[in-house]
Amino acid sequence: MAAQFGRRVVKGAATTAVAAVAVAALSASQAPGVTDTAQSRQNTGSQPSSDPNAENSATGNSPYYTDLPPLNSPTPSPTTGTGTPTGTGEAEAGIPATVLDAYKKAELALGESKPGCNLPWELLAAIGKVESGQARGGRVDADGNTTSPILGPVLNGIGFAKITDTDGGAYDGDSTHDRAVGPMQFIPSTWEWAGRDGNGDGKKNPNNIYDAALAAGGYLCRFGWDLSDRADLRRAILSYNNSTHYVNTVLTWLDYYREGTHEVPDGTGTLPSGRSDDNNGSSSSPTRTPTPTSPSTTPTGGSQTPGSGGSTSPTPKPPTTTPPPSTPPTTPAPPTATDTVDHLEDAGTAKLTATAGDAFAEKIATRTETEAGKAVAKVRVRFTIVGDTDAAFTGGESVATVVTNSSGVATAPALKAGEKTGDFTVRATVVGRAVSGLDYKATVTARQADALARTSDTALTCVAGGEFADQVELKATNKGAAADGVAATATLIKAAGDATANDKGPYFKDADGKAVRTLAGLKTDASGLLKLPKLYADDTAGTFLLRVTTTGGATLTVELKVTAAAASSSPSPSAS
Image (cartoon, rainbow, N blue to C red; front, side):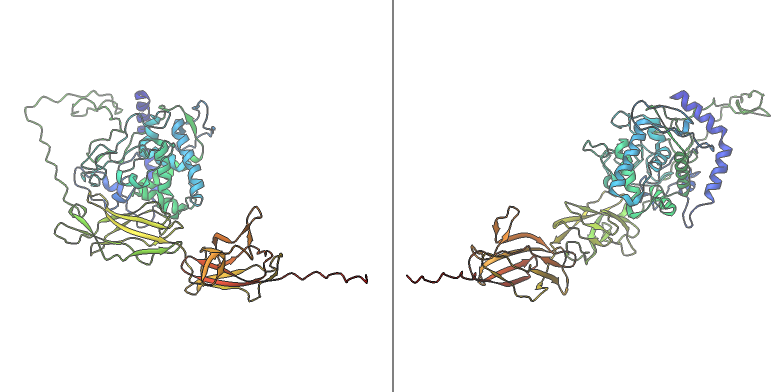
């Protein structure tokens, strides 16, 4: 692997001029109003970095690999993803077998759960290439776990964004600051809600390529984006790492992989060399193999360094007794607004109740405050839906991040109730700050109707032993509007004052043809209509009552009349 990496470095150096031209061409297509944060992070030395978008991205806007693919397209050599991987065509087009399998499985899973997203596996491959060099050339075991953790640099605000620890070091081993983790480089606070179990082992592990690939796909498919649309595609990638240079680099690899790829054995993939933080003076991430440095000699006169193309040998500089200048102390990053938050307070949220399928009338509002109770503006607050519920925020998401306004208040997007009734919780937390969350209880009630009426005034009559010609049809309304999906029960009762099921008179039939006089589990249709099954009569004549009740208290009693069967004629007496 070391020799292979060396060859990659030489090739990268040989194509630097070509890569520079390609990047310049790509940069010309940048979306308006987007800041190239990758470029702004370069050449920053050790100065504190304040990136307002970092905590709301997948990677915390961590550094990434900047290598570009060859300008010539790869020779397609598709495989089925099974059997022994083969390595043919351009080396850069080779993707380690297990890693490639994870990308393709994630595409299939997202194709079922979010078909409108149109996620191509090549996009996951492009991001995986830029984030970790395809899990460092495919250094994963058969289950997709990386052979050692892949960690980005410490996000301490020195040369990078500052993100205070959010996971107690559970994912990144750092209990002071966060670090991007795994082959798709998720920061812990994002993985906490975006993490997925892609290999079915019951765990959500950012260092597993199957889990990480599925999580990346889910992250890119949120907000209803259609990745077959170039504009949505750019928005999704930009949300992963807020840098236009990053977007353009990923798109270049996406187009390259679409031209054709092939499998290579795990652990033999090509390793990238250039990174977006090469010039910021920070320590390198464990994902990056350092380039050997030459001895500490300084060329003088017309001498040239070895390998620079000249033939003159370097002349060693005479020894000096002057001590080298000391490294100036690092200036600590000033506290951010997030650092000053001590606790969260409810900002006047009313009772959260909604009927199944309806939007909640109230929105959740949370205020961030200092220890002294002063409001803190420009702080990211994350709202997460917790519990057994299918309720969601606008756009169908279970997580939403909102920045506090000048009054320190963050207002969550509108909540919409699903079909599951009962209680659930919406938890507010501060992104990048370990303070206690604030829980809001929400309740979803069953769909209701406050009125029932027959759709026809035809009398319901039947001869004893026969069947009713007309079926009973009702319409349910709630506050004058059609009440769809409302649960109802129909019972043939003994009397107006006795709702006990009758033991004689009209009846329904069950699936086996047996007589039943109570039907539960009925539900109105989309127009609020409810059509009952056919009614039959036994041999008892008289007037009977059918009562229908719904959730919400609507009740209607319908009269049924059963007449006696006509008497058969008797024979005349004989003369004898």
